[in-house]
Image (tube, rainbow, N blue to C red; front, side, top):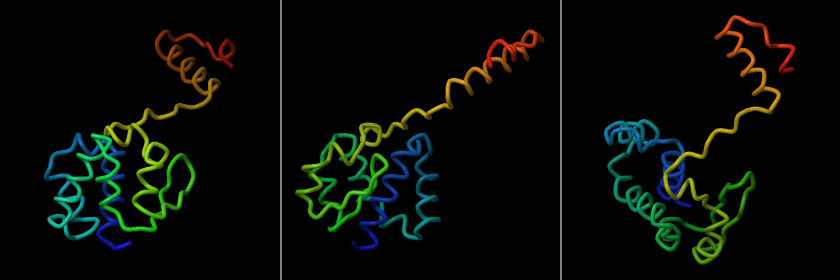
Length: 135
């Protein structure tokens, strides 16, 4: 895979998954420049990637990559041999959150940890000691 294709996919994943859309265009441009050094060269392919992700356009996204390609999704690595392979497996390889540019909600700790946090918060608010009731 060429450096440009790898970088476009990497940066696309970073920016789509990290809430970068809340940043200004200049912040995003500066971050790309910092990471790669050629932000101007990424403008068109990155915009194509973002538009294609939002539209769920697997064919356009597949056309931006060089193959074979390794994709990490759902905690696993997938070897994608061709653009056709990418398109056929698009739903498994690209999450809805990534496609829409939304960040998946963070998973908070276990129920026991949530109860502890709640008890600490209640204790802080009313001065009482609820530790024994919640643990």
